[in-house]
Length: 145
Image 1 (cartoon, rainbow, N blue to C red):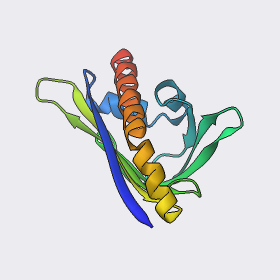
Image 2 (image 1 turned 120 degrees about the horizontal axis):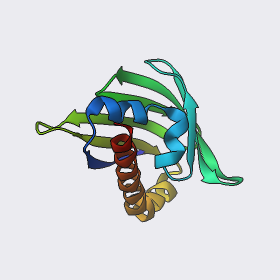
Image 3 (image 1 turned 45 degrees about the horizontal axis):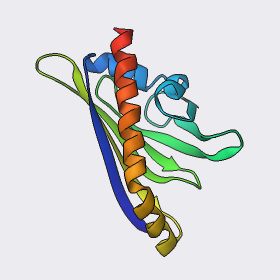
């Protein structure tokens, strides 16, 4: 199985604590992460389920929270069939105010050579969606202040 990493970041005028609260308000994911609904618990060991798709076409992403540091970071382990690996969101306060949000995914690609070919084609679009999502998250957090 091949492992790959992809990441994105966004600058936000809101403080880290506010960004964290919006980020971990799972039902609000649809407001900033395209085509994705989420629900789940809070804290290490809690389960989280995301559903990404349009209508009947999509996939379910089952996760377990592995890190929970309010105002700073949340990390998950993807445990489903479609997505395996780990994800981490880190919110870093900026000295002049606001914060930077970092999102990293370390994924385990299925299907051997087919998975690697698919990743070669999807890597840039996935990163673009991650960037878009973080910009939308930043705007939501800035409006929540």
